Length: 214
Ligand code: HEM
Image (cartoon, rainbow, N blue to C red):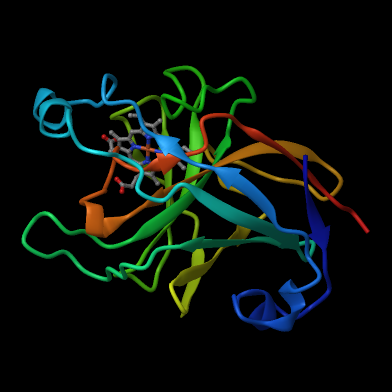
């Protein structure tokens, strides 16, 4: 169970991965596994990754806070190989995303299902803007309209990233409530390993979360 702390710090501090406001917040270590090749949507991608290691980043530290209006998730992981752009078609920008079930029973290992959508919020090292997508199973991601705020810094060989969104979501995306509970997962793309889209390290099980309300 990860508790999303309630903080009254200003929005700017919570959006700063290096701000002291994050220091007292407990960090939870989550292990990342390779996404399964068998469920990748195209035969080409299934074959081209058959003998390659997927999920170069083995784990991520997660901290989370909310201020009654927005949630802020701080991710930190080791990636000595900093990739901010697409190069030669085999290097992609580093990235990370968090995902929530929109319908409680949604499976994580297929990014939801036809009747059980998930909502993921993504950071990519080549963009200042975050992205929100809704998926109804592998190969079905569609952009969703809410703004996702992101910020990232390098600290030595670490990425420190904040992904934030308003607690209240639009139709079709997840809504969170102070005092309420949900579950979430994390994915990390190591762009230097050619990881993008379905190829990434991911938490194979949901982690329960609870939002503090005071
Ligand atoms: C914690 C779990 C996961 C998260 C947070 C996550 C997040 C995302 C996000 C944000 C995208 C859209 C952005 C992009 O294409 O770069 C995406 C795309 C994709 N994901 Fe996932 N994902 C997760 C698990 C999985 C798993 C287990 C698979 C299984 C193979 C998978 C397969 C795909 C595929 C194929 C795409 C490409 C877009 C599409 O075809 O719809 N994902 N994922």
